[in-house]
Length: 146
Image (cartoon, rainbow, N blue to C red; front, side, top):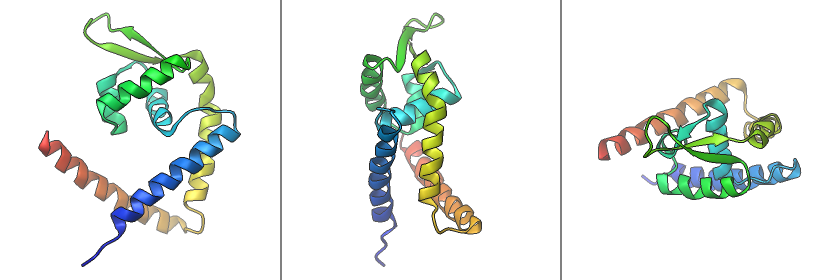
């Protein structure tokens, strides 16, 4: 049996990222999709290590490190040494990044409306439940491999 779900998910992800980045630029927010994922996590819980950000975003640690480098250069986040564990680096939001949150959330809401255009509320809920099941399965497989 041939299935196309994974192919569709990949296509949706790529198109969604391009459209979302375009909407962000139109609203004066110059950040990439990866940077947005990191910001989203830090807005919920500031002062995290690269490992914590990696777990919360599902991005690889080396990817997080590279993206954070660019964010530091743009003045979006800053690095500091964890006073409780000097081997750990803490990533924190700058005031500039904290100020982006409202605009970013407006763009996110617009993207969600585009995403679910033509869906009933029941269809949206069902769809998100199916996606959550797929994510849970893949997370369990990945966790068992580590």
